Image (cartoon, rainbow, N blue to C red):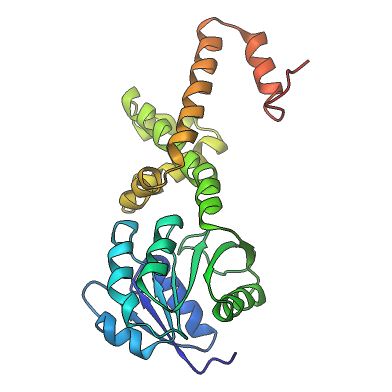
Length: 261
């Protein structure tokens, strides 16, 4: 497939949408972007572009899909870049007769290159555009994994949901200690500083994104309940001064179904 077609990105004026707009331009494609205050109407964008990418916040994704989907011809592609896949893919399948692929780039707009970064593709309808996307990303050096939307969301509840949940709890505990960052700095370790840098992202301008990742993924609650179970187990060891018990728990971490010697 050549590059004699246009790609439209809804939400392409900032964040990961802009990153992919720049990526497609570098690959030689004509790209149209639209945002809240600029760009073509959705219906017009759909008639101009054979590939349409939805890159808006999670809370707005379904609404945008339902508005733009009916305007796409069957030989075009509708895809999204959101952190969740089950609901967006279901919405895309219901809103359009076009080919549908769910896509989740596992990196943010601060990365310099797609090379050596992970991308998840969730095939939903059609093979032509799926092959195009996979080929383009692989040739650019990305690590591409195929997944069902459900498996994607289950895996993200661990790799993304658990990470952000733990980061939030850590930062809230530090906040409630009453200590200022300037007081903590002389006592900080390298790993502590790394974790604080993650906290700055979660508690920063993209707080709505991280909140949605935790509250909109139906599999996160199961992970949180396991976290809670192990939290109280760890708390008991500390409260009882049970060094041996805690060490035993740590040694068994890679063998959850076995008892450590």
